[in-house]
Length: 77
Ligand SMILES: [Zn+2]
Image (tube, rainbow, N blue to C red; front, side):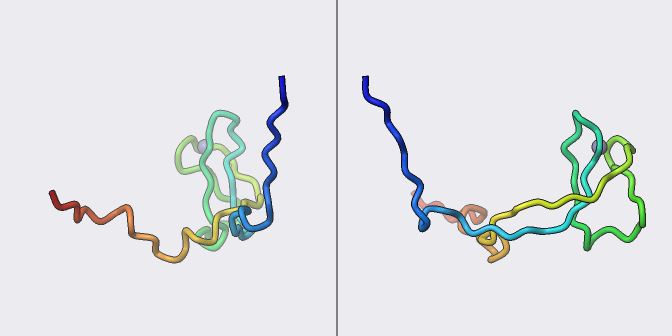
């Protein structure tokens, strides 16, 4: 049996940026919000009311460029 090793090159690496967020402490809850959208000093989760903690998240930069290709329904038959 041969081992298939996929080599990830630099050009395949998606462009990401690190943003500051508040994220929910709840283990089951995946809620988070960008820090810039939060005005409270100690926000609570809008979903489960658990206290939130400061964190960082990496998001793809491409998402910011207004990628609407998949949102418009202009399919013609
Ligand atoms: Zn929560």
